[in-house]
Image 1 (cartoon, helix red, strand yellow):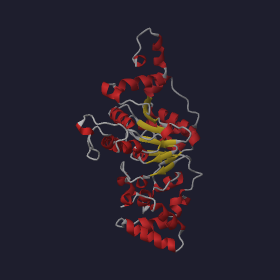
Image 2 (cartoon, one colour):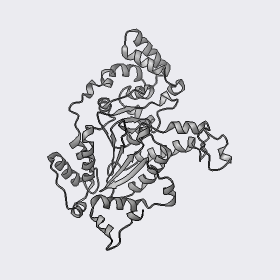
Image 3 (tube, helix red, strand yellow):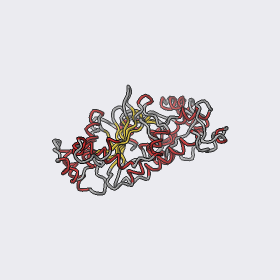
Image 4 (cartoon, one colour):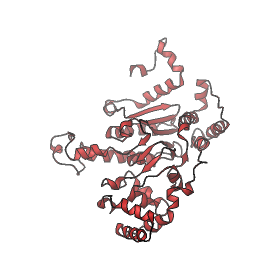
Length: 374
C-alpha cells in the first residue's frame, strides 16, 4: 500500500507517475478509499483494476472455473458503487481468469452454502444464539442467508447501472453458468467466443433460475426461455446470438486485442496528451475510436469498438440447435400457462411419434428436481 501512495518529489518512484498503467493503478487505489471494512472483504479471487477510464473486474479462481463465493460478492458490492458514482469511469469490463479450461464463471459456490446449511463447514453466525439451527430464516452471519442476499444485491447493482453512459462488457470466453449469468446478462454487452458454454442448470440441483433469471427468461422469444430454464440445456455461441443472449462474437485469439481497444476507447483527449498519444494501425479500430470520441464525455463510448471486433461471419445462428428445434420448443414450452405436467405429456406424445428432440428432452427432465420443475 505504501508503494501506491503518491510519490514524493525527488523520489525514484516519482518517475513511475509518467507510465500510463501506473497512473491508472494509482488512481484506482486512491478511488477505493480503503477502509478497515473493505480490507476484511478483500480476496485474490476477485481482482479489480482500472486502466484509463475502464474498470476491469477479473474473476480469479480458475480451479473452480471462477465460481462465485461470498468474498467475491462482497468485493463487487464494495467496488461497483465506487465506480458507478465516479463520473470519469466510462465502462466496466468483466472477465474470467483461465486455468486448464476456459471459464467466465461457472456459477455460485453453492457447495459451500450447502455445507454450511448442513452444519459441516464450521461456519458460525456472528453470535452464539444465531448459530443454533437458524438456517432458512435469513439469519445474518450464516452463509445460507448472506450469500444469496448479497449476491442478489450485487445483481441489482449491475442491472441498475447507468448502461447508457457506463455500460458493462462481459467476456464470455468459456463456461458461463448460473451465478455467472447473473453477473453478466444484466449488463449491456455480452461477448461470446468459440469457447462459450452457457447454461442455467439450477433445476438439476433443486434450486430455481435465480440471479434475475425469472425476469429475462420470460422475455426471450417463443418457448426458448422456459426451455432453457427447465432443461438447463448447454448453449454455444450460435445459439446465444440466435436467442439474443450474446450481443457480439469475437474469436478467443482476438480478446486480448479487444481489451486493449476498450481501454483505448475510454481514454479522453487529456489522457492522450499526458501519455503522448497513440497510433491506430487498424483503420476499423481507428474509425471506431473517432466515433467513440464523438460520444464523449457522456454516452456509450465502447459500442463502435465492439462492432469493429465483432466477427460472426463463420457462425450460422439460424442453423443453431435452438433454431433447428424452434418449432418443437415453441409447441411444447411456448404456452405461458402450461404446467410441467402439460409439458411432459406433450413431450411423451411427440416422442411416441418419433421425435428425437422430444425423447432427449424428456430424458433430461426426468433427471431434474421435480420441486424445481414445478
